[in-house]
Length: 253
Image (cartoon, rainbow, N blue to C red):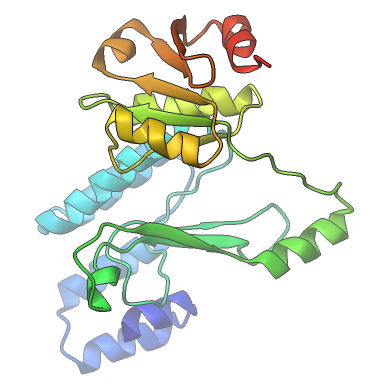
């Protein structure tokens, strides 16, 4: 935790002094040093070099593969922002146990959002083992940034659509569907806990959502989505690329 905290605060010289004092091997110190220098938007190059460095450590390689899958899912979901892969990124909190991230904007040296994976956090406080992922948004930082940029007031809409995946559908296709709907202007909430369709319907109705978008293995193979209108009790299947028809169905009064 101390090492991560020092890396987070860019105290790199102190990191290596501390590792030397506690007996960390020269090989490990060298690998950490090279990882701290490794970052970029050429994801293939970064992942190859990091994979070579981490080849003796299977758990670390699996974490790297997981990060690559996450980025692929983000791209499939329509995230077209710059993504910089930085194996040396650290956040000074011990409860992270998977990927971490920070978000920022060009011209600003501080992050506006950051978070990651913490599957053991609930258990740490006495709860049952519960997978967890989240972030902390810097509301004040964002407010000052928007005021400086004189941006228009943001008026987010509540999601009217719940996206549900049936077993065997890929995470990438779920992300692709969510991204497509959002680009068309429809706020979407994605079910990430694997609700069964009847449970998802109850959840959607409770939270004032009108539409359920259902995708499974067959939908993925055919590049389609099933849209269930909970108000009219009808369900239609639409091609994922048929944007006109998707707008027509989801814009129903």
